[in-house]
Length: 510
Image (cartoon, rainbow, N blue to C red; front, side, top):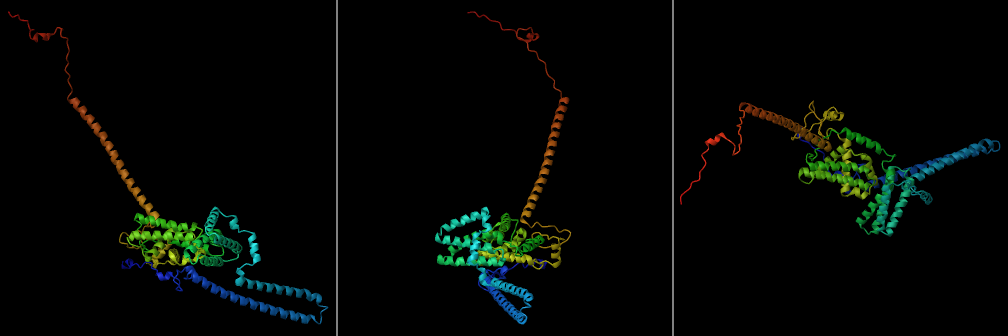
């Protein structure tokens, strides 16, 4: 029992959320614990080294091919000198074949060198002009939302006047350039192109607004919305990545963990409180809604709203401000209950194409870093993380048993025949609560109907008994009526004899 009560919970030190290089910004698991700035520097350093190695290899191959060609050409020249006339017809075609083969190899080597050259990222003027002849297909078949974003973007740029026109021109040129490259570049290379564009434009805006970071951030938000709305279909979950496989693996993993209860994660939320339950439902709705957004900033806004609902639920439960140690377990619980669609793809999309300043600092970056930690924790969740024995964990994962929440003491009884499934989902809990209320109302209605029927039967019996009593009294005491005849005054009546004599007038002497 003591082992059950001493639950260690899920704890992440705040220093673990920061960049491993100690720059003070928030790190990301997708960047190996680095922030976007340090990751780009490390990525460019490794890539530059790879380019140099490949360049050296290409030059080495080219020298070997040239030496082989020179030795082969010299040997054939010596062989053809004494017998130039007889062997001309037989060795001529072979020499042309060797020359053609060597030229082809040389061309391939040059192509490899150009491919790994840093200048290969910048298209030549001629290629740029060719790319401008055909507008991107995504702009030709733009949806209503895309058109609306474009109109809003132009309306916003009107307030900037001349800088606004230059920003729109650069954005359009960037989209045209990306439309010609997106089929040949990997997801990381596309991300690097977008981040380079963000950085270059932000630097120019910083000099224009004379260091006003608030104005630059406002413009960059609109630029990100315009750019990523048009590139969304091309860069979200591209075929060159395994994002889709990761999404399926994460969804299956969360489905397999459907039995995890709020007590196992030591979450400080009481869903019996209506306000807490409402915040939990809102948090689940926000994290699911993230997949419907196109702009990385809008996806981050969904994560931020979800996190604030979690903090509100914890605060209402504890009657005090929530701490960071309370937040991460609650976020893991919300993700398990919501099972957001394409969670890994959305995380990667935000990581690759969001404005880096949002991910490195601020509440958006903090909440997003915690979401990445929650997704990583779910992937590695085991018996020790939930303070369960390995046998219990395996039985729950296989579906042979389900955990049962104890009553108010928070105990965790061993699984047995009496184990029942606990409604840990807030929606299911509310549904069960409503079903219990309906069941209670049904039993009360049945009792009321029985009482009404009993009252009706009593009224019928009372009526019959009253009628019977009246009938018995009338039979026992019948009514006897007296007959009387009304006669006129001048009618001969035998009773007149009984009347006194009439008065006679008397005369008195005067």
